[in-house]
Image (tube, rainbow, N blue to C red):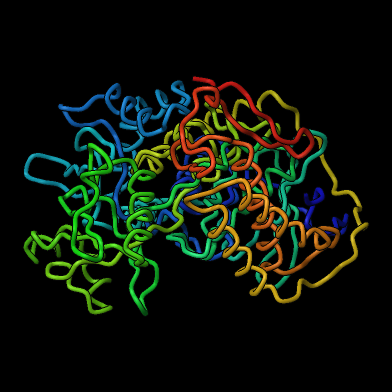
Length: 537
C-alpha cells in the first residue's frame, strides 16, 4: 500500500494558521463548518471544485426523521437496524433517531424549505421504512434545497474562510496527532493549513465503479487520506448500489429516486412481467440490496441490460408536481414517465463503510474527525436505510462541533513545522484516464453487486500492477485522485475478500448465506492490517 504522503513535504511551503479545517461542502461539511462557528473564530472550508458541487446537491429522495404523530424514534431505530442486517451499532443509531428531529428543525430555522401539505410537512415513504417519515423539497430536489440553505448561511458568515478549487492532499500528523492539512490550489500552489482540528466531510467513492450516481469528484479522497494518517477504515465491503438508475442510450446515469417506488411504481422485466412480488414480502419497497440483486438476476434471466420502472398509473400532472426533476430529465431524452416505462439498472451509490469514528465523530487519530459518507459511525450497518444519510450528517456534524472545542481546550497547541521529506522522486502519471477507466471496470466486474474469491483475488492482482507508482511524488489533481481511488479500491476488495458470507450490500456467490459466525466487523489499519472484531451492538 501507499507510503505516508502523496507528495514531498518542504519547510518552505507557506503556513497558514486556522482554528479548524473542514474538507468538503456537502451537507456534512457545510453544517459542521457552521456549527463550529459557535465556539471558534476562524474556520477554513475546503472543496476541490465549487462549493455547490457535492453528492448532497444531487440527493433526490429526502431526509428521514421521526417527526409525525404516528412515528417514533423507536420505530425509526427498528427500521434502521432491520435494514442494516445485524451490523448496526444500536447506540449510534439511537443517537441518530433521537437527535435527528432537532437537527432538522434547526435546518428549517436556517431557511431550508421542505414541501408541505395543508396539515404540515409532506412526508414520503421509501424502501424498508414502516411509515412515512421522509421530508422532501421541491418534489425530488431535497439535496439541492439543503445545499442552497446552508450555502446561504455559510457564505454570510465572516468566521468561515471559503476555499473552493483547493485539493486536500494529506492530513499532516506528528505521531498519532493531527497537526493540519496540506492543500493545493488550482494553479499548483501548496499551503500548509496548521490546525489542531481537521474534519473530513469529503463524501463518497462512487467513482471507483464504472457506473455510478455520484459526481466526478467522489474519488474516496477522505478515506485514503485518513488511512495514510493512521485512522481505522471499517466496513468498506458494504457498498450500496441504487436499484433504479436511468439506463437509456445517449442519457447519463441518472438516479430515479426510491420515492418513485414509494409512490407505487413497480418493476417489470423486458417482457413486461412484474418480478419483485416473488423476491420479497415488501416487493419493490424491499431493502436496496435485495432490489438491486433481484434486478440483476432478472436481467441475467432475460438477457437484458435493464428492467423497467412503471409509474404510468399516475396522472401526468401528479408526476410533474411530485417528481419535477426526474420528469424533466427523462423528457429531455424522449421518455414521458406518465406513459413510458423507465429503463433502469443498478449503479454504485453509497458507501456504508469509511473512516471509523466513535459516537462523537472522533477517529483514532487525535484531532481528526469524520462526518457524512466518508465516515463509518456504524449507523448503517451492512445496508443503509434510505434517506438516513442526510440526517446522520447533521447529527454527527453537531456532535463534532461540540467535541472539537472540548478537545482544543484540553490539548495545548505547540507550534508545528513541516519536516523536509524529499525522499520520493517526482514523476508524472501517464495515461491517467485510461488507468482510471481500467480500475473502474475491474471494480464493476469483480467487486460489484456479486463477488467471489476468484474475482476478488483477480482484482487485487490487477491493483498490484500499479504498486510501482506508489514510490513517487505527484503534483496534479488527477494523479492524487487516481492514487486515492487505488487505495480505496484495494481496501474495499480486501474487506470483501475477508468477509466469507453474504450480508446486506455484500453478496458472495461462493458464500451465499448469512452466517451468524460473521456477526463481526472488518476494519483495516495501515500498520495493523485487516482486523476482524466482534460487532458492537
